[in-house]
Image 1: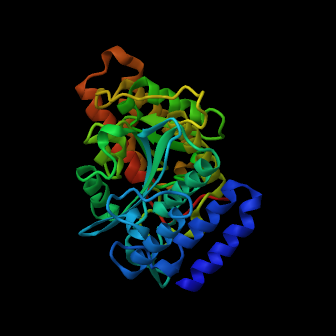
Image 2 (image 1 turned 90 degrees about the vertical axis):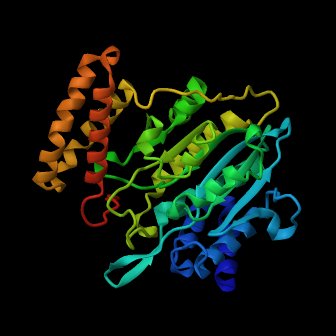
Length: 386
């Protein structure tokens, strides 16, 4: 492992002059390599990945774990693994924190395809982890007004264990946490027609201020960022742990396609152009919250309880479906027959307007979303990069 770390370090140094994002593919490829054997929590590969990540954090951030020094100051151990945490202190509001996080663990092994049984987890979630490292670089170059904490969760694949432990034993007081930005499955495509489609889930938890900040972050990009209510993430990523503590939260994701949780989710399936755009979206969202100038007006989201789903969710889901229709020839007719009644329900809900939206509509909307998610995971792994 020492040889691998040194060689990656040399490559990172070599590409620094090309721009901040030039390091991102190097780090993602490293984390998704067979060297870490799938990064299963508490496995030798998972521990080696953690050691490498602490090494990266220690170059530009401060370890916030009280009573610890050296590498231990960056680690929050728990029974099933250890979270990695680093802080860049804010120049104006050091006691206010924006958290940016992703899980770094994966499954290790998840079946065998073509003799390959390592579940490398490139898009789930080496890409999300890489984006956290990218934000460390950018905030090192552009110091924030609010403090920024960078958090990498362990044992997410076992039930969000790392983030659940953190919110019950916070290293940074939850009362000082302004917002949490969660990254899980980035640089992935559901279909060729959805290569520029991605999702921002749960921003309503921070009220209109957070919704608007996310919308503004997408505006200069080539991506269509569909904002959906928190339930559409199925509470299956670490954002759920923060929502449970009433912390304003956004979950950035590309959802689950046919490469999800298979040995084929390796570096060859990453859409690097999309990932670069997502780095820009994340940066603009993070800087709206944390700032990079003392004179900047900061977005301050406030926790807001909103309806479980809304009529607008139906409109956005239908827009994604309409965009994807050109590629439905890859699905068996039985799947299309199953989803067609849901499409009729969506069309009725939309035509009746927001004022008529009720519990029956909500159930039908969630049924349509569930059927669509199952449909998108159909077939052999294809990153739809051609």
